[in-house]
Length: 125
Image 1 (cartoon, rainbow, N blue to C red):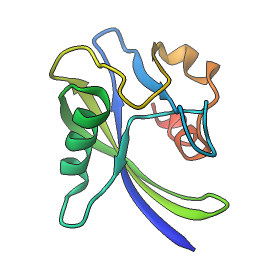
Image 2 (image 1 turned 90 degrees about the vertical axis):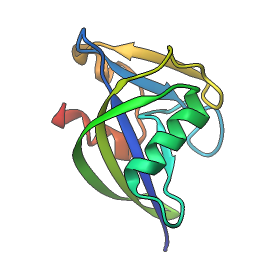
Image 3 (image 1 turned 180 degrees about the vertical axis):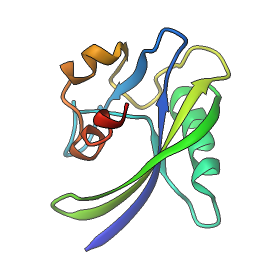
């Protein structure tokens, strides 16, 4: 089975809200996820996350701490997802690849349809 390793940002604000993005492409189009992306060769998860957030959202983050690493089997690949709690350190995000984004209060996190691997993180928040 194909293996994919990614880093994901659990971006929170001073009101306790979490930033979620909606996929605009692929098999999982319209599902919601924590932003981030694939780790390139010779990159640490933190370096990949910083790069991906700049590329996808045109902003910068401060990585606070590692929350968890999720291992999840999708039908066509195995995902390893390193998840980090973060805050914005730059301007408001600008969507470059996602269809939509929302700041969700913790009591509304389950109001969107999350990707299965991302859904497993919600109980940790």
